[in-house]
Image: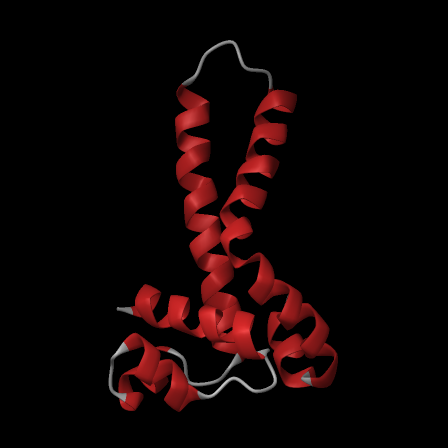
Length: 116
């Protein structure tokens, strides 16, 4: 269910931008109760963290498969994983472009993403 809500949010961000993202519209598009959206994503920045986790899971799965291949150098493996990450992010290209542009006006989300 969390992935369904995340995908709905990213679809809306691609259409309307990060600043105008509405939890009610996300609930409507995902066809879930508004309370469920808030249960998984209590604030907008939680969508960014969830996307990062989703992409990380995909890349780690690919890394396991690459580690089983013999004859591939660490450099080739790193290159392949870098491309895998870009491939995983590609479906969200339009949403990420809006997020990047709009984050300048949402310092709370930026702080949430800061390491540490």
